[in-house]
Amino acid sequence: MFTVSELTGLLRVSIEEQFPDFWLEGELSNLRAPGSGHVYCTLKDRTSQIRAVLFRSSAVRLRFALQEGLQVIVRGRLTVYEPRGEYQIVLDTVEPKGVGALQLAFEQLKARLAAEGLFDQDRKKPIPVFPRTVGVVTSLTGAAIRDILAVLRRRWPTLHILIAPVQVQGEGAGRQIAQALADLNDWGSVDVIIVGRGGGSLEDLWSFNEENVVRAIAASQVPVVSAVGHEIDVTLADFVADLRAPTPSAAAEAVVPVLTDIVERLRELTVRTGQVMLRHCAFERQRLDAGIRGVTDVRFHLQEAAQRTNDTVDRLRELVQQLLTFARERVHEVQRDLSGLNPILTIKQGLATVPQFSKRLEGQMGVILAQHRHRIHAMLAQLNTLSPLAILGRGYSILQTVPAGQILHRASDVEVGQELEAQLARGRLSCMVTRVCDDSTV
Amino acid sequence: MAAVKFEQAMARLEAIVGELEKSDLPLDESLKIFEEGIRLSKNCLKILEEAEHKVEVLVQDKNGKKRLHAYSSDDTADESSS
Image (cartoon, rainbow over all chains, first blue to last red; front, side, top):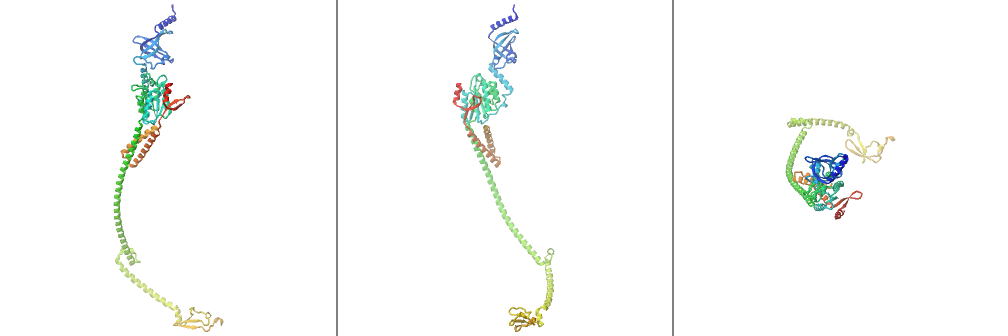
């Protein structure tokens, strides 16, 4: 008689010996992935099911995610889990049925990242038209770098190219590519980045489908152009890149224009600027000339008008002068004729009254003159009585020295022999002093 | 960034030529943007002339610091031998 353990142990050995390595096709269900990292599931077909376990060491090697309901082909061995007395398959590899594991992984990651919006068109940054520095993430040994450098150099000979060398396939390639993208972003002066490699198998291109590469492209502040393999190869890097170029050469063509074209364009724009400005100036010059002609015409008219005005003014001035003279004369006439009278009154009364007034003035003047003449005569008669000549008439005479003509008042004023002249009422006498009798000495 | 400046300058120059060619601007406005256009044209040419062809490789030294060295065909040899 066996114990439970003994029988279970025997069954386990038997089963393990019988099914050490086999392939099996089935549908995945009851997927469970606890924290241990082991994956537990059930493989089933229409009528039966078997428990299976994928230990952590094998699980991490899977490139795609296990999904409920997925039809898979597995390789493994059969064993018995003794604590429960259950038999189960210890899975070594799991392959999706129909498509390759890589293809499935691609589709799965693509769907997941698309759901996150990483491939949305509105995330895509514009590629600068005139980059000054182009970053290149690729292998230094591949054909891609030679193609890219050749095209860039041909199109824009003065371009600054910054290469971040990476492995583009194999273990760690994805991590290097993601790091290089971050490094070129950190460098600061890069205007656009080309990331890619030459052609190869799906396995060779696989790094460009890795999640960290896709995320690094999405995170890049600098616009990224993908150039992976040939035109028919499509990677997730192509979906997330701001621009997908079919080949590395095409990427180089996409990021820089042809320098000579740009110089030509610049020259053309400059020439056109000058030409259009010259045309504009010529047009304005014509307008100006027309304007000047117009102004000249106006000036001519103005001159004519000024001449006419001058003539008119002269005539007016003359006329005014005449009027003034006439008026002044008339006023003078009136003033002369009517001095002493209120001219306004005179004007009001009119010229007809002038002769009358003149006559009256003349008459009055005659009376005044006669009165004065009479008074003068009276005064003259009065003066006459005071005249020394009148005294002489009464018998007095005046003695004067000769030739000084000094009138004598005292005898002592002269000496003997002094010639004197005596004036009488009528005529004069020449005399000689013969003796001086001074009363004061008497 | 120089690239952006150049792109903007070219775009502005195109716009100026377009505006001038419409020729419905008054003369003083035209002169103003004409002068701007000539200035842009000179600047663009200067940017083009100043650019220097360089191919450099971004590498990490022993201390993990990033630096640049000039690219040469030797780089290919180094890589392939390692």
